[in-house]
Length: 470
Ligand code: HEM
Image: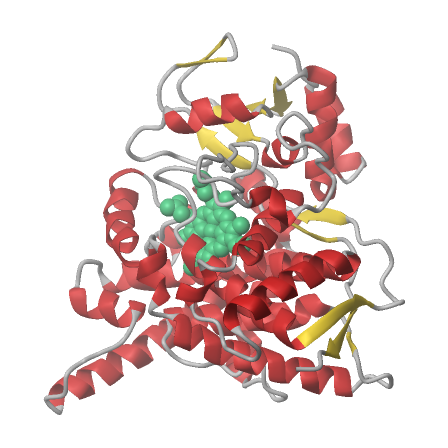
């Protein structure tokens, strides 16, 4: 099998800062070596798959408990602190057990539709916040660095569902404990490279190079601490409701705490990992979506027309309305095709597998190159063009699904938060489009993407939000 050698990879990643260009390297290597190629990272062999049909073959051949990647450093932290693994870090029986509980709660659109009102309250705050932020600008229209705004929206939204409480992220004064948590999250991502090394650096080298491991543990400590406080608060409330003989009602967390299908440590770990997975993913996608709308005013108008025609002026959309808004759904799909937050994903083969004519032995690390397949002309004509309507069925027999773009993964180990993320994004974008013309600020240049763990904007996006006349 062709592919770059160890030295070429070392130069590309360590010398030329390849970690922030993983998506570009994926494209470059698939052009150079073909749609299946191997790479060596020291002793680690990785087989990259950049072909839509081969990706489909891998995911369709999965067993009952697929493994994404080696999660040794995550497990080591959890063992050290006597913590459980959550869905992201668990494997085998443990993963299967927790996944089957959570799957029943949040995997289908109808499961999360009940959260519409909670999410809409957070959208109310988002719209108000846009008003506050643009009023701080001399021209009264610009919101600087929209990702900061969407980060807070995503965090407030996911916490409203996971903790069943409001954190105040969209307020002028953010409470100190929330601020500490935001810092822990930022540390987790800003120290992405060091945390990669935390896993890669052999344990015996830690006394010599202690920082990566220390930062890794420090950010996890912060994330767990925050989740434990909120889970414990809800548990206390439930206990006192029961003592008063009241009926206990609530959402996801209440269900987890009362159904007793998972231990309290499992709940801490899952809530922590879901919060980690659910903030930057959603906020980057919202930032890109608004940026793309601003860059394509005619598409923005097309979507606005659909929204007003379907909902009538000023109506607040619910999850059920989103079925009638194919352009809103197409907008999110097309944004994630152009900017898949996870530009690549992993699988460790659990059996020998024949792929593209090669025998891949059991235990091999595969890299599924979603960025390359998303931008492949063979899969998507005019692949660099922004066309949300490519996802809209013109006839009932049209097949618009495409393995070339599976931003939430596919199959039994796919994203468990997909329906929550979609609800948050659909409701926020619908309301923003109803209320504002979005325009690019003259201060925003052409924004490129970079990999920083996730695929994110390489520079800040500043946008103008101009009131529509309703
Ligand atoms: C735009 C938003 C999001 C995108 C694009 C996204 C994408 C992904 C992808 C690609 C995976 C790996 C799937 C696989 O290996 O096949 C994943 C896993 C996961 N995501 Fe998301 N995600 C998003 C939002 C969320 C949210 C809001 C949550 C929390 C509610 C969440 C929780 C998780 C968890 C827990 C896993 C691990 C699932 C498992 O291993 O069983 N994600 N996500």
